[in-house]
Length: 133
Ligand SMILES: [Zn+2]
Ligand SMILES: [Zn+2]
Image 1 (cartoon, rainbow, N blue to C red):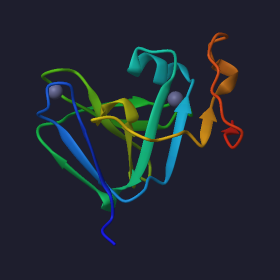
Image 2 (cartoon, rainbow, N blue to C red):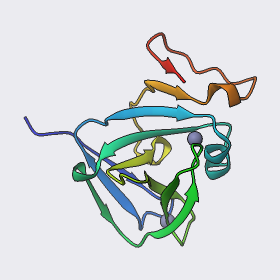
Image 3 (cartoon, rainbow, N blue to C red):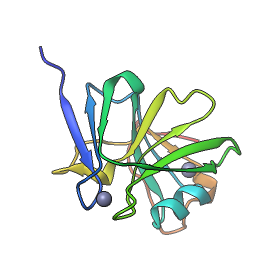
Image 4 (cartoon, rainbow, N blue to C red):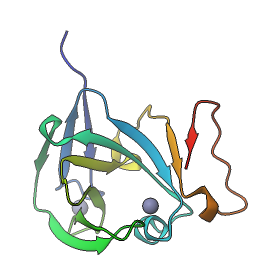
């Protein structure tokens, strides 16, 4: 059986990432950094092993410490500003792709909800199987 390929792109379409197979982890995060990066109330991303992704286009790198204080590498499109993937140090071994960038849509459901102590009071992440951290 051929592994499934899911494609994500920045808003203008010049930066692309193709993810083969299934993600290691799908999570939502309520930390301050994820809120600031996404400009939203929380961020949602699917994480794929580095050897399962292929990128295309010009990406600009921005480094910023994550919620845990360790540096992460954020890659974004200089033209439209979308962050299309990010990698956590020190491993840099998996690509986290914000799920809103998958096209035409996605069928991901989070397995983890992280930093729920910083969750906005009006946000509710539903799902019996979700591990809450
Ligand atoms: Zn773009
Ligand atoms: Zn976060």
